[in-house]
Length: 306
Image (cartoon, rainbow, N blue to C red; front, side, top):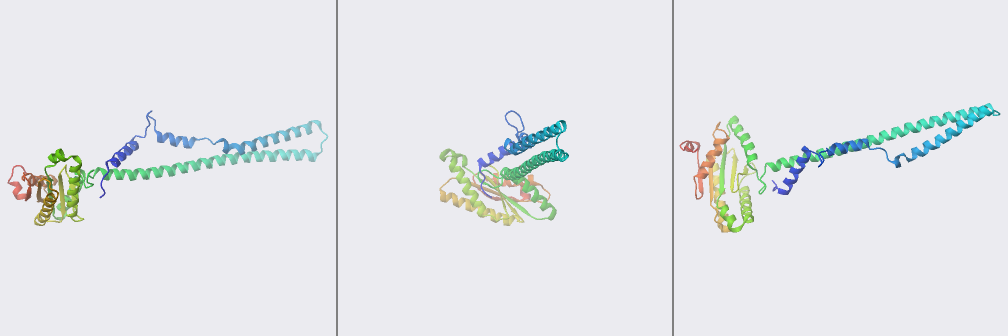
């Protein structure tokens, strides 16, 4: 999983807020105003120019023909054919004028339809982009911003699913809580950037030490949880010990005094997520100066802290 970017997370959060409340500083809904303005936008003078010229020309022509016809009827002296010809001209001019009005109306409706189609396509693109950003934001909310691995929210969801699967099918599940100590003093001596690089390097080491089907989560500043599916306690203990030794080895190579504590335990059917995490945390907390410990359910029951 790619490393999360705080700037991207902040940007996606702002996008989600705009999606929930698309209002400007005056409290108006900008998306509604945009849609209304596109639908109600009148035709421009350029679009109406030819229609106006044609309408003026036909109006003048009809007025002239009507005036000529009236003059012929009042004054007389014109032939019957000439009068019929004038009447036909008036009828033809009237039909052409009506046709121009109908054509202009149809053109306006087509123009509005095209704008509505463009609006619909734009809204579809916006919705697709918003769904994409919401998915990215959802991923960001379930990953650690520094390392890109799962956080507590993803751990709770995953652990709930996997423990229910174990209860239903009788499969096994083991976890290890690994804590890297001494980060507070290291931050005071060398700064936050060194601590962040130390955490990233340890996460990279842990990722290299687990399989693709395994899970890695960050619980707190220097505390991590590894989850092995279909793994018994002895196999989980061997895997966790290898991770523990690898963390000790990188401490020696870098010359850092950061003790490592690793507590391992296995899920007991029908016990629930809370007791599993409490037992793993108990195994880790008993190692005050670092170390490795496998704690079974029977051993944890002997302690009132479990």
